[in-house]
Image (cartoon, rainbow, N blue to C red; front, side, top):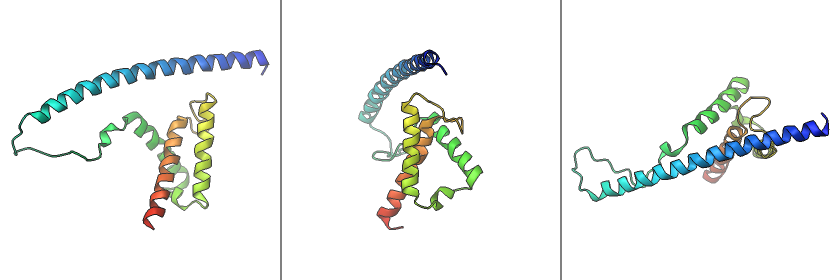
Length: 148
C-alpha cells in the first residue's frame, strides 16, 4: 500500500475513532444524568419508612446489574468461540497460562490502541478479548490466593 493510501486509511480510522469517542462521551453524559436522577430517587426512597412486608435489604451487596449487557454479551461470545474451538474451560488447563494470557491481553490491547477495534481472526471486539483474558488472570490470582 502506498504511503498516501496508508495515511488516508489511518485518517479515516482516526475519524471513526473520534466519532466513536464522541458517541461514547454522549452516552456517558446521559448515563451520568440518569444515575444522578436514580440516586436522588433512591435517597428519597430510603428516607421514607418501609413496611417489613416485601422488604429486602440489598445494601452492601454486589450489583451485577451495573455490568453493561453489551460488554457481558461480547465477553460471552468470545468465551463461547473458545469453548467451541478448544473445549469448555480448556483455558484453565493451558500450560504457563498466566504468562500466555497476559501476553494475549497485551496483544489485543495494542491492536486496539493501534486503531483496530475488531480482532481479525474472531471478528469480535478486542476489548471483549481483553475482558476474557483479564477474567482468566483474576481467576488464576484468586486460585493462588485461596490455595486451590
